[in-house]
Amino acid sequence: MTLATMLSKEEKRLIKEIWERLTPVAEDIGSDALLRMFNSYPGTKTYFSHLDISPGSSHLHSHGKKIVLAIAEGAKDISQLTVTLAPLQTLHAYQLRIDPTNFKLLSHCMLVSLACYLGEEFTPVAHAAMDKYLSAFAAVLAEKYR
Image (cartoon, rainbow, N blue to C red; front, side, top):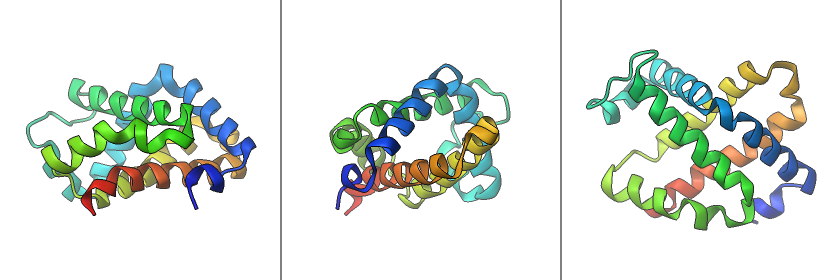
């Protein structure tokens, strides 16, 4: 079963709408999720030892924005997620050699950041849809490791 079949038409619309709305604040959402991950799972910092990842740093904001924009790009056409993420799969698996568990950890932290940012708008339906999407996003990024 693919993500496209796991999500209802309404869930796909909701995911796309949420990420379109968050694109202008990509830096804020992404850097918040990264900080949460670094604080909750300190071992994830090892991949960023060459960058300043302190709160408010330009590196943190820049990388956070890249992450959110990639997630938003994938949400535009969920049925093509593997194709959309192919360059990132290769980069993370072969060049950066990121532990694929980190994608799951970041997905969880991203959910928390979304809940904080969206507040009451992050309904149970939105939460469930986003959890499915972010889980699939993390799984697709990890596919090259198999």
